Image 1 (cartoon, rainbow, N blue to C red):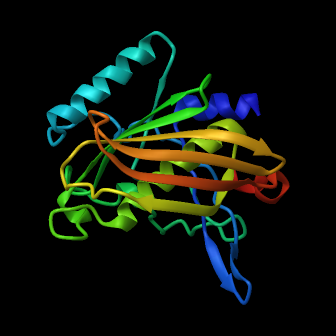
Image 2 (image 1 turned 120 degrees about the vertical axis):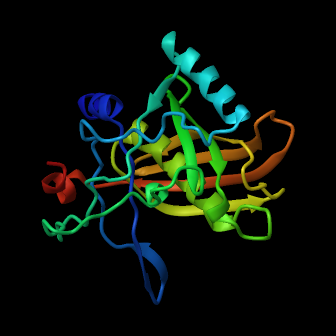
Image 3 (image 1 turned 180 degrees about the horizontal axis):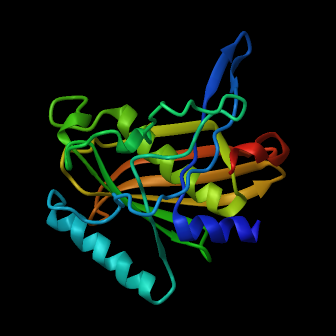
Length: 231
């Protein structure tokens, strides 16, 4: 496990999840492998010209903290090596990480994640672009759920290795304006066997507004089922 976490921290990683529906409700279908960065690919977690002043200020804050070892930035790329374990993608198939599926900066998910090992905590600095609109002028609830799922799941993965989302509960309290800067603050509360319990919040950049609260349950994957998908 330590070797896996070390490799992920060096190269960055994301989790994937897929569910199916049966007569008993949603259930895990298959697993995705952890994605690995490719040298020469753009790291989208770094600042770009569309980032607001507040987004850049928060980024610099955690970048400075990372220099003293308290936090570590998690690289992020638009492509990944995730696929269903029993159905590897064909050579001609091009896939993209859902939150990095747009070529234009600033219109979708602009974010950067930082992880604190000691606190089992993942911080995501998130700036929603105009293509994420739900109610006029505000971020779609599904996009807020996506960034929460990604941040909660990434935190769970850095503690326990490969995981899959089993349950996500969200309370929407205040809408998130498009183009605003929010902090997605998530941590692992406890681990019981294969179950990883997480909790998170979405707050305004100045911590004055609580936008969203969430809890998540992730399941550690059976490594024997996915070993052949990690290469």
